[in-house]
Image (cartoon, rainbow, N blue to C red):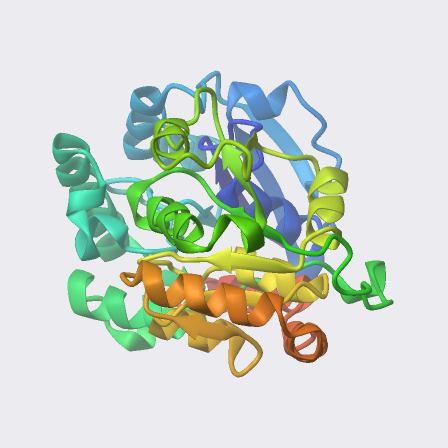
Length: 365
């Protein structure tokens, strides 16, 4: 039996993309699946929480995922040392970063290359450090997992990793079996929803500008979730006079998120860059129509089940939102097509394909 050490130093306990990724994937892997024993090298936050979703032993690294400097240092050195100490045959680093050098082979998941594609969206020194760490980790990895063809192309282009070493394993939305009946639309007429952190590439200021262009008498309500602490969008909401129309909310529980989707006529995803675009798939799997940016990776995810807009054009976005909110039949069509599209993705398949990548890496010894 082979032993795989899973690097969970990044885990903070907040509901974020990479946390969801590891919980969904490893929550669907049975203990000893594929002849593999799993050990999780956990952040102190994870080690002190419920880890019943993980299919193996959890080892506390003593490193806080909240302390990003300690996390980065841990990726560079601690993971490789732990792999030798625990006699691992393979390491999975699921959060873009990995050891600078490791005697134990590594499978690295790279979700996106934002610091390479758009360094202007990442603080200067941090951007340079991230680029160096990602490049070193990718070059040292036996195989690189990524979540979309678009990201795989970026990895070949910016990191010079041969395509033969890359495995594309898409993500998934909510399990359709958990929500089998279509949500009647619109549940709350004129309710928009947007999901994401407040990094500049999420492009939420443009969404607020578009909302301000819609006449007040027909302006929809907008809920934006996903902030931590004081919301940097609040000044723009005030400046544009949108206090009566915009609700800024933090991270929601799964139940709260389900309710928010169910109450929304549309989800709007005006992003400038993504490695995958999970909120689009999350919305479609819940029967919520999607308006999203006209960028290649979102076409890869949503196909013909979304309405696409230029992410730099507030007026075009405003016109699209107004048109769709006045067309219940089109909303119903988008809801049905979105559900059908979402069924092409599943976390069970993501887990199986991840295991297959591990098996390939182990076989290359």
